[in-house]
Length: 173
Image (cartoon, rainbow, N blue to C red; front, side, top):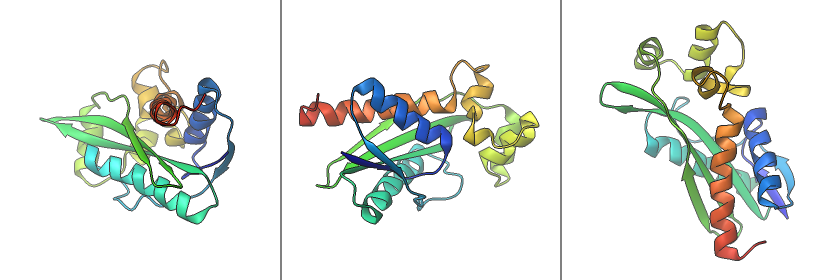
């Protein structure tokens, strides 16, 4: 079965590989640099979810795959606190769509201030940690959980939710 993931981000690609192995699904996995169609920094569950759907849809349209997966990270405000939010979408070539959300945790005020100023979480995290490419590695979730949950592991959880819904509906073993 051919599956395309709408990203080149190694943390997200690894998440799909690990989740498909855990779910016992064998994919011929391709990557495709799909556009999210939302702001570079999504700032709500709705916008982040739409970004994941758009990535999956775009990847499916541009490749000859049986299904595509889109993963999108964003942030959302709950009261005065900024939280991580993460979404995934799986779309099949016959038009079935599955979505799922992942872990979220509050972000420090200096990160929230940067988001309010219009900056993106990835570069903010690079500056906060004095590292490069946090989004391709442990991610903000990894930094703020002391490495107990990495970005890849968090997205793996989302992909497992997607695959589980798809398997249940299609009786895929």
